[in-house]
Length: 549
Image (cartoon, rainbow, N blue to C red; front, side, top):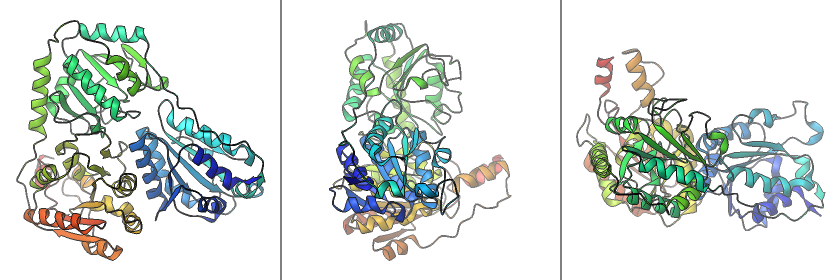
């Protein structure tokens, strides 16, 4: 006989869970009690949104479900931000929510929410336990659902009495991973398409990649001389200094790259959905009928033909597809090798940051310094805002597992993601980039980094405004500023108040010594860069945007 709380923890252990992220609540005290005697590491967070984003980052970097526990009502609604990220980003995550006791349901009891309705559109599966003896079944199924096909979040609601009840239940067994492999007929058809192509292009995206698959994709690109681009915030899928890399297919795409994709006769899309952002509002690939011959490789059959009608649909995970296609060879020397080299040259030019701009701090030299000083396995985490352009456009990702950023464009992600990444890889450098507005959405998770001795470095690009919104506001309604100014704390002092290390950068030359002091401190650190709001993008000032409007 075991309590429901013990069965939950047993099932997590059986499925290989090594840590969970949580904000404690009285609604799942029985689970917390069971965790006391478990080898699972429990990381307590400061807000449920941050906890869910940490679980997302764990799932994003490992391919295994990140686990998050929150309490009912306000706890669950706070966590929904992380669930939305995991859904749009195809990241495996399991959220456990304490729920009101069974006898109080449907009475609008204290903090009661109908989670099937609340999370129905932003989770792959939502279930509420109504029989404690079925807990092992449901938890194992949750792991299977979260990782199969197109990965995503699962929500499990836990009525309080289900966790305290003592029941007999079968021993939990681990879920069986499901891999989807391409057929020989589809590979033959792809080989024929590529052998007949004149201007092919490859776009990598989505999840269910691993380090071996990335290496195999690199070998495929070399064998076939293929130009390769990475979808929005999936840049860690290909070495940016490889001769076949053509650039990121995302927001603010290189115009030369956009023209190349539009002019392609065959586009091989592996793993991605090619949504609104990477498709430039469905203009690079027209929906539903692309101008190019589209070969779409995806692990979830429901995504094939959903937005685009592909010339060839291959229902396979990225890892299984590249393993199979790596055995295929071109019929002769590809005719497009010169165009591939030209595309890489255009990328190198595009990704060289400008060295000047308005104000006393220039981000270009700062990015050059980071590129020179940081190891290739450094993990970059960020949320959303104009500041992120400096990472996405000018940081040259070299290795798999080095990027944690939401394709959903959610602010507040960088700091909690960095905490999770550092807990996962304590020997690697972890950098969080955040704007001033972005940081303060989940900046309290800096306290979590301090509590668990996780020396992340948060670079806060502070321009005193919600920069992206101000940019659009000045373009659409020039001179009519409202609701985009911010009054910020001294971020370096805030870091010290939390028990971390703080630095303030007011001139370009200040950054390198400030960063080195932060790194040498051995503490979680905030390096605040006070950027002139005129420097709204790497290449345009606020005045230029306003004047053009």
